[in-house]
Image (cartoon, rainbow, N blue to C red; front, side):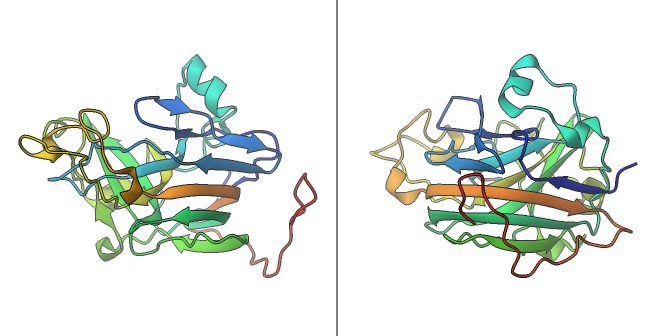
Length: 251
């Protein structure tokens, strides 16, 4: 079984996908040889509105197992993680990402989200204790998926999705991340545009009512490489000062 996953996006999006704008569903990331890029406006994911952890933007997402629909394959391309059956035990895995971008975060952070299913319930956990920096220059950053709950935030569910999303123990999910992993922006400041009757969290932000987009993150994020070394393996070797020439000649 392969133990170190490495996606360089040289031959396509590698199974990674995004959500672009409200209500549009699964959307392709912008791909050119060696990178994938996601740009605002991003969908406001309201599935975890209070009493859940809150709203988020889904930037780049990878389903870890199939089967995949024809539309999914068309959008995300060949998914080597699923095809090569990489491990689903992410306890103490080391994830390395090479990233750059320009984002007006407006209180949000770029963090990793992992999701697993047990029975009928999906539980998502955000690695809020190890946010990733987004800068105009490429940077290579490591995070470790430690099972320490103090490093994580459980997404939970909005009022009417508790039969689908919920809280399961972090250790249970990290041992079996069988749904997906994502890079997301969290938390979002969602401000209704105009008066509302009742609790806005019981409605769907951006769908049932307009929001002030000036309060939401804005910009782009570009991913060059994603590597995951699973427990028991050495992490990928450090490449301090590494320069990888892009197809357009830029470092």
